[in-house]
Length: 104
Image (cartoon, rainbow, N blue to C red; front, side, top):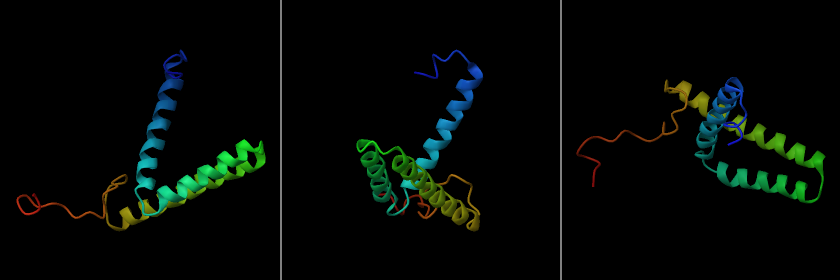
């Protein structure tokens, strides 16, 4: 809504592209074992800092959350590279289904 009303097509396109990229990285990282639970813990830490009106702690918690997500994304991209899979393929570890064999 904010992007649609900003009146600047260039800004809207840049921010939409950034938003789309973040959303795809979120899906990729949250699909990794244990990451969803860790992410919830990180966000709780941010929330507690905000509730306690501690901007420095909130900032640190936000930075650490983004760093953790970036580290996980980096690991996934390295694994995909090692397997020669296209970047952004979140289902790399799942074997392909063979027609007729795997269908119930």
